[in-house]
Image (cartoon, rainbow, N blue to C red):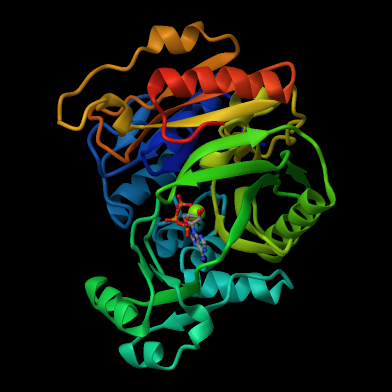
Length: 383
Ligand code: ATP
Ligand code: MG
């Protein structure tokens, strides 16, 4: 066990790292962040900041000297950096699991190997690979295999010709071509798996995306046959990866009831932000508990909740570039709201700036209050 008061290390400096730092500090830990940016959301709240690239050996050495455990907040940390750190300190999640999920081709192969279905797809390494893909993959989405996020590195394609153009546009890097599916619903499951293999699963989240970015998450704590299947698949994936840490699996539900895995995030997830105000333990506290070797916390849902993402668009109420501060007082006057802003210096369209959790005694109350916030901030999707 790593006792409160000691240092915990974090690779990555975004909002997930900021919320991790807050949770670690609430438990009495000190946090050192390694992030190449000078004043990112995590570095600006952490107790110490090592400004270095994720593969800078000097920076990684400094991090390893400072702390006995390191975690990550984004999946694109080079796996070899995690591997190098693991010679000196505890690293959760470990390099081998992260390495699989940071490559969509390896990730899909791994998920299938666990008996869990994924979307119909083909790996694309060259234009020749595209020439031979089946017609069932069109219309489809070409996704870069590595380093994509928030819908970046994705192109919707209707034909082989369009796919060839998109592949060229992405610079010929390895991709997957996925069939465009008719989705009934999107779900996600966040869980924590401790150093001893013990798992704690959070209630299932129902997600609505807008332009490829999560907009709304709704959680009522009900279990259904579908949520049980999703939970079982998530547990199988976490065990199959021999994963230690917090992990999220995103699911697609098709019109015919099929449940497929979209992707795995080896870290806390945007669709788990609701846990900050609606569960006994947040996903970030759970991340701290795993790396410190503490018992996992209760994932019990205390109340129905709606999470609304706040993108930079909210600062631009008109079509021009005139920036207007959103009416936070009006948001906070709505009963049940908790506002979380990430301290980003600049509001840009499509950039995640914060989120609002809205709780209610019933799901209907939470939704009604969330829709007041939707109207105040003119969010693109209602709850
Ligand atoms: P993030 O990191 O935010 O999860 P990402 O860049 O990894 O995003 P995906 O999760 O692959 O992107 O896709 C984002 C969203 O686009 C999905 O949640 C879904 O709404 C839609 N989408 C992706 N793939 C498909 C598909 N094959 N069929 C239908 N919709 C899809
Ligand atoms: Mg996704």
